[in-house]
Structure formats: C-alpha cells, structure tokens
Image 1 (cartoon, rainbow, N blue to C red):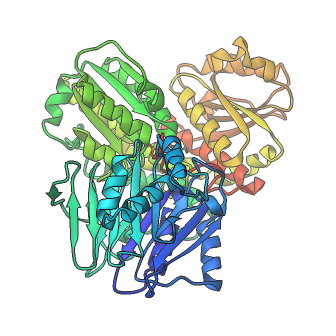
Image 2 (cartoon, rainbow, N blue to C red):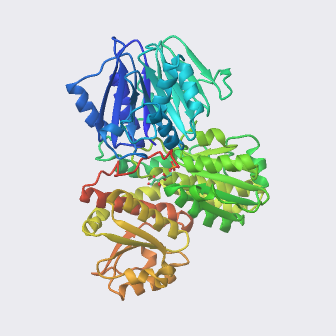
Length: 611
Ligand code: F6R
C-alpha cells in the first residue's frame, strides 16, 4: 500500500503532486508528505499526519515550490502514523525518497548505517534506503549509480521515487514488487503508483516491470531492466480519464458504488452474451483450448475477492463437475501441496496488485505446477493481468471506496460466465449454458429491485448503532454471502461480526446468542430454506433478535423479534449476487449512523501491496 507520485516538469509541480496524492489516498491515508527541489537547489519538504487535506492545509501556510518533486500518502507498516515517520525521508538535506513496499533486511542495514554515523529520525524501514543512497554519493557516485548501488543491498519490495539537491535535473524511479507507472507528458514526466494519480496531466503511460530502473530528465527517459540493459517499454494510451471518479449526488463513494452495480454488471456483460451461449471473452492465447482440458480449478484471492471465489466453487462443482478449491493467498503461498494434473489457477482481485495474490501466482509460475493461470481482475494492465496467461476482466469502473462492493458483484458475474465458458469449451450441457446466459440478462433489473430496499434497510440499520457484535448466517452458497456481509460490517462500522454456516451454530456459537446479539440471515427460498428455518428457530428460542433478508416464497414471519426485509424473487443461481446488496447497504447505513469514515475506514487501505 502507500501511494507515491513524482514529477519533473518545466512548471511548478506541487499542485500536480497533491492532486496525485488525493487520487492515491485509497492506498493509505495516515500521513502524507511532499518534497520539491527549489530554484536554489534545496530540498523543501512538508509532512503532516492524517489525510492529504491536512498536508494541503499546511502547505497553504508554508508553500513549497519547485519544478521537480516527489510525494507520498502512507499506510503505516514500520512505525506509528506520525510526522517523523511520514515520507519523503531525507538524508543530510541532500537526497529525498518516497517508497512503497517493505524492506525486509532494514534492521541489519540500519545497524550498519548507524555504525557509519547516520542518525535515524524515523522508525521506518524506508529510511535505510535514503541513507544508503547518500552514503554512495559521498563516495563519489552519481545519483543514478548511487540509487542502483543502494538497491543492490535491499531485500523486499519497493517502488521508489528519488530526487537529490546534487542533481537537480533528475528524477529516479525504480520498481521491484510494488507497482509503479510512468506518465508521459510534453517535456514533463510523472511517476505514480497507478495511472489514476496522473490522469489529470497525461493519458500516456508506461507500466514498469519488476526490476526496472529509470533515469528521468525533462528531455529524456532511460529505462534499464534487472540486468542493467537499456530497454524500451510499450507506451499505452488510456481513456480512463473519461470515467468520472467523483461522488456526484452521493455522500460517499461506497453508496455511489453500491448503486452503480446494475450498470457495472451491465458493462461487464456487454458484448459477451449470445442468444444461448457466451462469446469467447477470455483474453490470452488458446483460451478455449485450455478451458477444454481443465480437470481441476484452484482459486486464490484475499478478503472480499476470496468470498467471491468461495461462492464460485459451489457453482463450478455443481454445474461443471470440476473439483474446485479456494484458498486465501497468504496461506496458499507458503503451503506445499501434492501435484495434480491440468489445474487451472484462477486469481481474483479488484486491484490486480494485491501482494499475497501476486506472490501466489509467482509461486505457481515458478514451479510450473499449473495448466495455465487466469486472472479475474478489474484493472487492465495491473500486475496480475500482465503476469497471467489468461484474463477475464470485470468492467466495474474505478472502485474508490475502500470497502469493495461493485467489484465483488461483477466478479461473481464473470465467475458465472467462466462456468458457462468451461462447459462450452468442453462441449457439455448446453442447457446449463443457456440458463446461465438467460439469468445473467435478468440480473441488472433484479439488482435495481434489490436497491429499492435502500430506505427500509436504512431504517433497519438504526438498530445496530449501539451493537458491539453481530452474527451472520447463511447456508450453501449463501454462507460466503454471509461472510461477505460480516466483513463489510466489521470493516466500516467497526462492529465485531462473524459469519457461520447456519447448521454450525449449535456446535459452539449458539452460546453467544442472547437478546443483545443481532443475527442477520440471508434466506432466499432455495432447497436449504427449511433447514435454515430450523436453525433460526434455535436462535429465537434463546432470545436472539433476527434480521432476515428473504423472498415471499421463503415465508418468513415478521414479529417483534424478527425483522424481515422482503427481497425480489430471484433464480437460485443469482441469489448470492442479489442478496449481497442488502448486506452492503446494512453495513453502509450502520457506519453512517456511527459516524465512521465510510470510504476510508481506520487502519485499512484499498490496494494491499505489502505482505
Ligand atoms: C474488503 C476489501 C478487501 C479486498 C482485499 C483484496 O471490502 O476490499 O478485503 O477485497 O484486500 O483486494 P483485491 O481484490 O484488490 O485483490
């Protein structure tokens, strides 16, 4: 996480850097800072604890002005959120850097540098890098060579931006593990953790590869690969600037993004559905030939994306008969598994930059254990899309709220499409493919109908303001929906919430149930509804208050201890997607009533680029 931005131009860059930081704030927001080289060849730095707005305010009183600079918005890893830990970090007033990533061997480097007389002013891992660079410059190396030499000593992940008072015409950028993109202007060049940061100033980008090292001047750009060879990287034009990333009439991005779901789903379906089949929409060589021979599927993801994977495993096994395992990336990457044949390795990610998911992909690529790798991702040109053999994009548009909403439902849409594509590739069950296609066509309308419950759910959320705990229940493919509901509630309202498969209650969690414990259940009328009802009776007879989302056919009776929101009738296959909506709204309104920072909940960041 952490967002970095940098610029070298013929005009003052501070405003450009600040706007870049505002657009990167989703990556971390506990402190921010900027450093520019002034006309007097001095590095002028300003840092503030809190959001970018705090830095902007500080700069109004004491501006920093220059045509080359770097800036950072932080998500603390080493050292508390405090001004002395905020980036840019500096060494002897001579070099300044911004860093995204983690330096694993920083403790030993710190001791070595201290022994050489360097004084540390922060608790960060980053500060070792800037002192190393300064030390090599003291030994006579140029800025580029000093940075090169310094990064030879680093173990871990980094995206770096470096400036020096000794070399006022150069901006250095380097990438290993953490994402970094160059933005190309006319006589000016920018660096950023993603293209969003630079969209106001350019639409031409170079996505750096791991190991890339760039020496950027106003009139030249040289990129070197890991071996030190100068390379040319492809320039990509982006029209992302046309997509608006503002809140419009909404109070929060999260609310806007919840309401965007019918349109996001429609865009994701656009051009991909035939009359009774799916268009071949997986990008990559021989995609359909690969799908035809898949014997097993391994899904890897984190957080909300992991929940989408869990739902898909029910679909995949029931409809294609292909065994499917789902695991969180941070566990999978460190586990040895027996080899299996013809496994399709599927990563799910909104950002395409999640460090654990990328590392899991890297691992299976290195050991060559998979038939092919496929990513389902919302960001074209992200690391996951570039590193995978195949990709199937969700087209949800930029998701700004830290809590994932439209990315999740569009992932589910694409996963249903994957079920259909596997069947098509294998020449199996055309009637199931047809049913998937027909149901997907109905989905945007059903989502609209679910969103009509907005006001009723706002009212329901009032009951949660004083709560400290909540239990979410579901059965079958609604169990991961309940997990997603619990994750949403905890991350934005800070209420402790857990999800259980309803049948598991009596094996322990029932002990938690009393009249203080709200129990939220997703209860569409599926084959498991009667089983679920018995589990809910167990809760009622112990004084628990129920909050149910159910359709008419489920015949749930509302009373003083049972709050029922009636959902539209939905085909069973679509129920996990549609029933996610009320849980998102419940979390959203609870958080609003509690007055938390909905779009930027404490301690979190949107793109988790550290392990
Ligand atoms: C929760 C949330 C996170 C992400 C997780 C993975 O609302 O957004 O749990 O789902 O950090 O991120 P991606 O999907 O970008 O890999």
